[in-house]
Length: 176
Image (cartoon, rainbow, N blue to C red; front, side, top):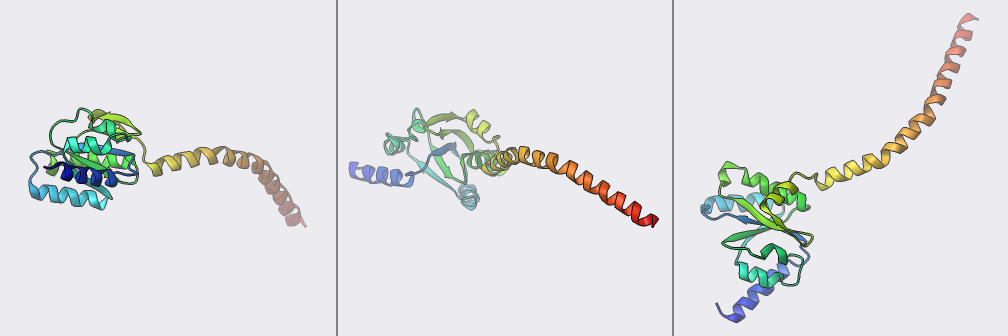
């Protein structure tokens, strides 16, 4: 491959990964073509992109970016997976695919998250984190919890008093 072609490929990779903050590396050596097509379709449905890339070109394309640690020491044929709603959704889908019997040769090998290199075990750990939607629901519950408790404590005695007044009025009205 000529130097010019390598530069074009490197520039193309750099432009594809522009704005990407996290990605995962996966091994899929030995997968049959039909399985690879099914895998790509499954990932595309989840808005995840996958590309098999030469490690040296990936290193050159990510040089000086937060993605560079992912390719440090990378060896062998690997695919790069990125996209999804957030990094947790990406890790969850990578682990779900790895546990599917149809894709038994698919396995996470590492990645990068906020400029920190991830190992295969780290990818598995990230997949167990709550997703973005779950985190937002937890946070909103924590924010609204004290306010709802305060509201119940303030309105509770007033409701009891109103109920007692109504009950007393019904008793007096019933005797006449």
